[in-house]
Picture 1 (tube, rainbow, N blue to C red):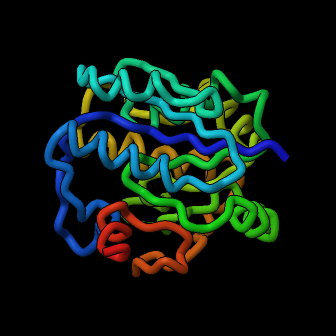
Picture 2: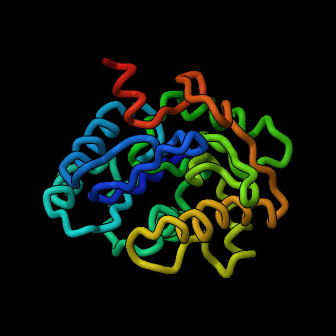
Length: 227
């Protein structure tokens, strides 16, 4: 089974949320330099057997772009315009490499994956009619979706989602970061596309509580755990 992990990155300062309903986003990235340090660490601790695809939504931070170009040939790097945010990056990677991999793990650069990919695959295959295994849990508001769209799926499922969505994975049709559009045309639309295609969204761990047993942690929480 050929697996890949798609990491969507953008070397910018990030918006901060403090609402309890958004635990995944309760971390502050204050500069492009800090964003680059975070991605370096995420890649350093990467232990999975899957091929890594880093999709860089360019923000004009040349040190970050140059760093990605120094990575080994074991990491596939794609530079693109910052169109559609992380969800545009997910679609970009799938369109280019769809025939090469059987399982697809979509994630953003501020999430540390802790469990072996095989654990996610086994759980995915053990669930009835699973379309997306949500690693950061699910939300039912304003409609069912996976937090951040972060999770594992299979090529055949993604192909069907694309067929029912005009040939691509859902993503915002705009440049840059517009929070509400990313939420509705990104997170929610992405999750709903699996449901409309006849699949279920399944949480891998706890929908509300962060703990290493969930299989992943926000980078901030992981770094505090490591001390």
